[in-house]
Structure formats: C-alpha cells, structure tokens
Amino acid sequence: MIGVSRFHTGTGWRAIWQNRPRTTVVPPFQNLGRRLCFAAVILFLPLSAIPQANPYEGGSPKKPESQIDKLVFANLDKLGLKPANLCSDAVFVRRAYFDVIGTLPTAAEATEFLLSREPKKRAALIDRLLAREEFADYWAMKWSDLLRVKAEFPINLWPNAAQAYHHWIRTSLRENKTYDRFARELLTASGSNFREPPVNFYRAMQNREPAGIAQTVALTFMGTRAEKWPREKLDGMAAFFAQLSYKPTGEWKEEIVYFDPARPGPARGLCELAYHHQEPVVHAQHRQSRLGLVARAGHRS
Image 1 (cartoon, rainbow, N blue to C red):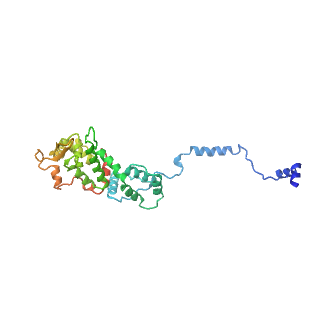
Image 2 (image 1 turned 30 degrees about the horizontal axis):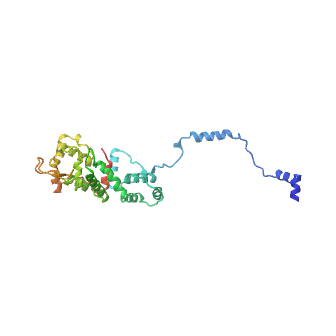
Image 3 (image 1 turned 90 degrees about the vertical axis):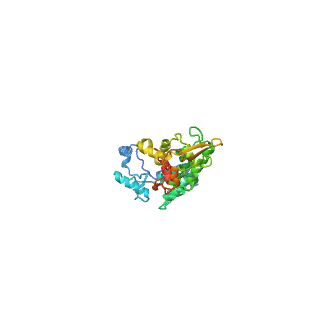
C-alpha cells in the first residue's frame, strides 16, 4: 500500500528523482580546439615518424655458412656492397614455397612455420619442400622449357619422344642427380630418340651444324651466348660436335643420334672424349646437389 500511495501522490517518484546519481555533461564544443589540434597531428604526421616493425625484414645479415654464401659475400665485399638484411619469416615461407614447388603454402602450413621456435626451421622447410613430389613436377616443367621439350612445331620431337624426354628430366630431379652427371648424360647420349631420351637434346636443336650446336650448349649449360665469342673460341667449341651425326630408321619419326668417326673433324670429338672420361663436362663447383639444376634453370640469358 505504501508503494501504491506514493505512486498516486507522486511523492515517491519526486524523492527518487531528487536523489538520483549526478553525472557531468560536457558541452559539445568544450575543448574543441584541443581536439582539432590532436586530430591534425595524427592525420599529418609522416608514417616514417611513427615507430613500427618492418614486416619484410627479420634481422641483420648472417655470416656466410655454405660455400655459395662465401662466394656471394666475397663478391659483395669486393664490389663494396652491403648484404641485405634477412627477410622475415612471413616473407621467407612465401618465397620458399613459390621458388621450390611453385605454389603458395596453405594457411595451416604458413601458421605452423611462423609459430615454430626451432632455430633451423628455414633449412628444415627447404629439405621438406625438396622431398615433395611437387618439386620434381615444377622444376621438370622449367627444365622442359629450357631444353625445348615440345612435341609439335617448331621443335617436332613427336609425342612419344617428348614424353620419354620429360620423364627422364623429372626422374633426374626426383633422384637428386648432380648437375655434372645431368649435363654429361645429355651431351654424350647416342641412340634412338624413342629409346634413349637424352638424345632428344640434340634433336630439339633447329641448327644442327657444329657451330649451332655449340651455341645451344653454351646457352643451356653456361648461360652465355657463344655467338658473341671471338671466332676462334667459337670454332674451338664447335669442333667438339663436328662428328655428331643423325640417321633415320624404318620406324615412323624415329631418328638415331650417334658419333660418326668417319666424318671429318678433330682427332677426338666430344663423345669419344667423354666416354673415356678425359675431361669434366661441367665445372666441379656444380656437382654437389640438385640445386645446381635449379640455379641454372633460374638463370636465363
């Protein structure tokens, strides 16, 4: 009844209103100048003046660890250039996946790498990527481009030969064949283009003259254009291929590539020289790993 009487008389609500908690109401234009000045500072302050972490760099350059590092650092020092800082983990994981297997990491793969605290996680990631099937698939595609693996015009290897050639390239990468062995097997190959896949290296050349073969070999394995060499140097290179010959068979589109000692040329051609293991075809520094193949495919003249 007390509540009802107060409700009807209004005395109860008046008391509640008079004893309500007091709050301070700020006029809308109070301190307006101070607020505008603060906003102007934030809007027009150069981003370079705001301290922030660089998302692309992960620290100062490390000391050289591998032989390749030592050669690179020595050349940078000779040129008076300072090595770039290490990239961040986020940049590294993206580059590693793109360069080694030709695709982006999944969200789970990227997160796992970024959260890892292993000190050698970058080297471990590279090893894992090299062991994946995508590595052989991706780099076989790149080497097929470099070695002109094409069934139709203008190379005309024909489908069965192109398939065998590509399979040989992919298997070489998958088995971690060293660069010197890879080059030697291509340069010294002989036999049927259907049964001996490496001989398609010579069949894919549009210029089968000794000088043309020398130019293709120089561009493919040395990354240089031999047509810019002095004449005597090019002639010396071409002499190795003077006794290389081709002949057809009774099978459609089959061709035999072989070393013909009856053809005029130097006393000892490239094939004979290589078969007797007198000279290394590729410099010793390229013999160590499959990365020699990758490095060459990535360097195009």
